Structures are given as structure tokens and as C-alpha cells.
Length: 417
Ligand code: FES
Ligand SMILES: [Fe+2]
Image (cartoon, rainbow, N blue to C red):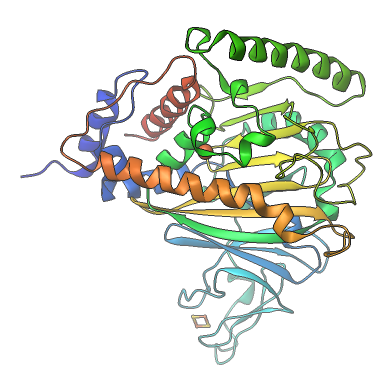
């Protein structure tokens, strides 16, 4: 007889060696996937999209999260709310995934009709004794932090989202995400486990060999290096970059733009890291030539040379630059498939063709995401083989992966595994 999933998963979690990748089943097993969804995606705050997905009353964004689905909408009082995408009659899914605009929410099954506030407004043939006020849509916790929307499907969400708000509200304010628009969106399905997607995103060990487009503006050395592995010439470049970073950090801090790294990772329920990074080359934006892609800057930004404000979460990564922002949501679909949803944001008054060109705006991250999808797929394929043994991380370049998996194991164990 096989062990039931929980003790088996608990034993796999306990067996992971520090500074090593996970035992294979934690990446590939369907029961582990279900446990990950239950714990990591249903009981923690997850990133679900930018606030400019729902700019006007009646605008709706439906996001599927495992077997659940949530409706994010802006109501008639201009409040952004979230509900489970489940009719209170017989449970039908109210709306398909994606962006739309509605007046009221009408269930396609028997036409129960809900206000944008979630109240049941109309249900035919239910009799006089039926109390509509007991049949509102079930709310989902939702918070906007500087225009990034976070949802939590649990009844009692982790309280430490306040720490993210405290760090990021001020850092994001000048980028004015409420006054941005989605200039372009790409959904990509990576053929790998979501933890491999996040691990891949937490290091730039692979960048110089695989990301020629990204490396124009992104300095891979920012994410660590072993000095002994560099030639004398590259070591001099690394030292010059460190000097440049120190100078820029002083300049930006003096202008009121927080620059220093904040890490809120293992040891906390809510996982995030932020830092304002110096870009390479022309230093303005993550484009083919590192020059801005949009003539109209975001929010109240008046300069293009304030670096790349990056932010990670356990299901997201973002880059905020003077001219545009790139936000990415990671949503697991199965143990071996992960949705990567990337949105490029520009000022809502920027005009396509005049202020920006979509191909130029999206070139670097489109290419980078496709390259990363290949890397995640080959990693997942290798891990599924009988020949896989957990591997050792580079302590110079992959410390953040060890930290991420330490966080993952802590969170699973905190919820009973
Ligand atoms: S299930 Fe929605 S109205 Fe019947
Ligand atoms: Fe990458």
C-alpha cells in the first residue's frame, strides 16, 4: 500500500538537503501540485494583475487559480473588489477567464443577477420567503499596493502583506499605475513546474549565455558572481559596475527614490524582494538599445535614468522603469505546466504609433520569456528522469534559490505538511 499523500509529502519536504534542488517528486508529482495550490496559492497573498486591468466601473478581470477562479472588478462606487467566480444558486462559474466590461453579473445558467457590489439583485421563481441578502457573492481578500493587485483566497490572510505595502507604496507611487494602461499582454505556458519557473527567475547565472536581448540593459553580475571565475578584464568590469551602482544609489536616494534592497523572504509568510537596479548600456529601459521605448513617461516620472525598480513575489516578477513597466504573473496549471502572463504598461495617454511601438516595447521580455520557457522545460524534463539527483547551487549566484526553497518548505510545514 502507498502512503497517503500528506505523510509522503511531509517526508519529501524533510528530506531536502540545504543548498540543493528538491527531490524530484516535489516538482513532478500531482499530489504535490494539489498541496502547493492549497497551501501556497490559496492561503498566501498572490499577485493577480495590475489595477489598470480594471480602470473604469464595470471593468472585470477574471483570473483562474487552480480549481478556483476569482472575479476582480471595479464597482459603481469606484471600489475594486474580488469575489469567487461561483454563483450562489448552484455554483456555476459566472464568467470565463479574461478581461471584459459588464453592467451587472448575470449567471449564464438561471440568470441570477448580482450587483457589482456582489449583492444578489434578482432571482426568479425563488418565492417570497427567499432571502436574497443571504446570497451575495463570496468575497475574496484583495489589496492594491501601489497599483499591484494581491488576492488571498483564505479566510484569514497573512498579516505581513502590510510589510510589502510599507516598502512598496512609496517606491511605486511615482510610476502611477492607476494612470497606466496595458499596452500589450502575452500568455506563455512553460512546460515545467512553477517552482522551476521561480527558481529560474531568481538567478542570472544563465543570463549571459542565454539572454542576449536582456543583457543589453540587465547587469547579470548584480545577482552575484564568483570573482575567481572571472578574467582580470571581467573582474575590472565588475568592480567598475559596483562603483557605478554606489554612485547612482547615492544620487537616486538624494532625489528621494529609494534604492536599497529589501528582502522579505524565508522566515516570512509573504515573500518579496525589491531593489532599484542600475541598467547597462544607455541605462534607460529594458529595450534592444537600453533607450526608453515610450516617449510619455509613467505617472509623475520626469526622468528616464532612475534605474530599474524590480520586485519579486512567489508568483510574480516586475520591472518599473521611467517609460514603461513589465509585470509578470506566474500561475501553475498542473505539476508540469505553468502560465506566465506578462503585461507591458505605459501611461494611459501614451499613443501607440506616436509615443511607442509595441514591437520595440515588448522585444526584450518576449525573447527572454521564450528563452526561459525553454530552460524551464529542459530542467523539468531532466528532473523527470531516473537519472536525476538533487543538485548543488552555486553559493555565489544561486543563494536566492536556496532561500526560495527554504521559504517553500517552511510554508508547507506551517500548513501541516
Ligand atoms: S447556477 Fe447560477 S443561476 Fe443557477
Ligand atoms: Fe532567464
